[in-house]
Length: 118
Image 1 (cartoon, rainbow, N blue to C red):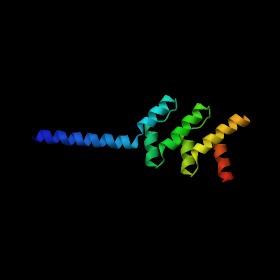
Image 2 (spheres, helix red, strand yellow):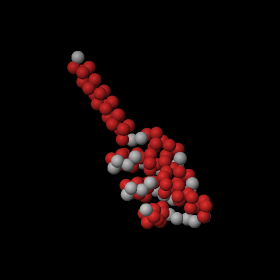
Image 3 (cartoon, rainbow, N blue to C red):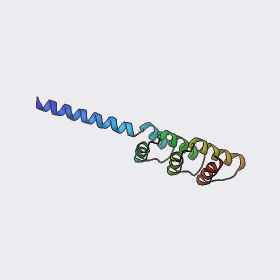
Image 4 (cartoon, rainbow, N blue to C red):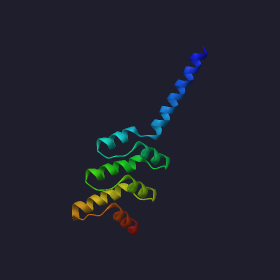
C-alpha cells in the first residue's frame, strides 16, 4: 500500500514538472524557429519568459528578418522590445529600406533612427 502511495506521489511530481517546463518553454515556437533555420536556444526562450518578454514577439520577426536576409539577432530585438520599441515594425522598416531603396542599415542604426523619430 505504501509503495502505491509513494509511486503516485512521484507521478504527480513528474506531471507538475512537465507542466512547468511546457509553460516556460514554447516548444512549438522553438520548432518553427529550427525549421526556419533560425538558431534560438531553449534557454534563451526560458530567459525571455523570465524577463516577461513574449517570445513570439521576438522569434517571429527574427524568422521574418532571417528569411529576408537581414542580419539581426535575438539580443538586438529583445533589447529593443525591453526599451519599449515595436520589434515587428522595426523588422518591417528594415525590409522596406532594403527592398525599396537598396540601402543597407544594420539593426542598431535603424533602432537609433526609431528612437530619434519618436
